[in-house]
Length: 519
Image 1 (spheres, rainbow, N blue to C red):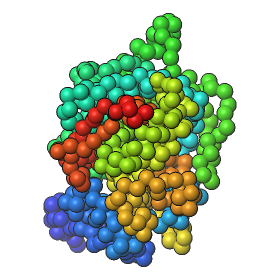
Image 2: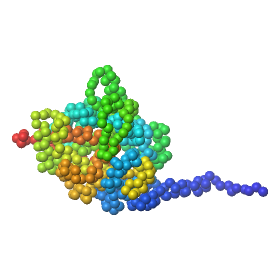
Image 3: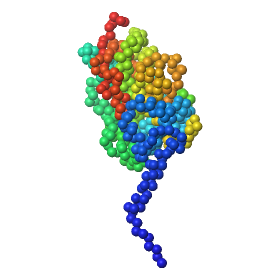
Image 4: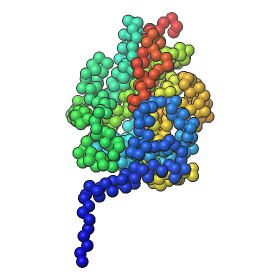
């Protein structure tokens, strides 16, 4: 006797399977932190704490300190469907960023990094042996010797900045500091990274300026961005198959053409200069130098020839990483000095002493500007360029100070919370450069100040950025004083939803020619 099976439609089968799949992928994982014994806010399925993050914004130091107080130095939350462990405990940070770096060597979870052009070849997105080799190959380009060779180019760009400030001083008009310092860093990166001279302050429509700024324009109306954020496992292979990168392809081809032109001109002996394009192209030919030593870990990699895609992609990365970060730091340093005239007076005296008998800020003078450096470092504490967090990803199941961290877990270091924590920094909202005297720095835990990261994956361009800021600011203070004006906002209101700490109404300041009788 034949058994008749009930006629069950595919719709009913799916209706029964989908809730199970939804539970397995989006409900059950929400208990992860409870199982780990880690506190944190209650997440929602699929979106996690996304809407809360959007409401609070990226720049919100008070909230981050509040979370630190409420949940402690280690807590968990979900960004979309991705779990993230928030760590500010300094000893755990030492383990994660330095001592057990091999278990946290990736910046982002593999599922959140696209292997596309150019971002797939950015140094910050590489991992494993590939990262080690490229980092080792690029490191000599940032040596003290190479940076010395770029001082002349930076001074040339800084002269334009000082002239522009001088124009406002003559007319007694206020200016947006961020626009001036942005022009300086744009010119500096074009010169030091791409070997091309531009004057972005007088010619904002220069193709280099236009294409460079495209990298900062994320169209959040693009559904692809949101689909990738919420469903990375589905979208990643699709975007990679299409080589769909979030950096505009047209702008990438522009920078590739710049590289081709420069290399062609150099092969024919038409130009000879030092810039990162040239250094990256020839990095594998450099004589052996001491291996990079960062804290308690050395980076061991092989120096290999970089492909054109590697050179162009990382040239773009240096632009994206250095433009906003350095220009904002310089603008906020000017703002802090304008509001603290006694501190500015000390800076001016130091600049005068270092620059006696000199027109340009040479390498020796840069080293003598220690108080100006303290002012920049305190500004970086108040306005860390990364704005929100530093990221790492656990590549193997690891135990850190008794806490078992599973493979694939994202680690977020809440830089704002650390920099504004009153227990680490008394009166955290005050500008106090003396926090960074040599004695104070030696007494303080190094993981309490993290604008450039820490460990082997710290910012490779840190010394260049500091040198660039010191030269640009020193050139200004050689001739001018920076003052607050009627439009100066005190305190500054920072836009909550920008990737970098950007002032809502700009950083409005004035300049005046220094009284020569004081010299």
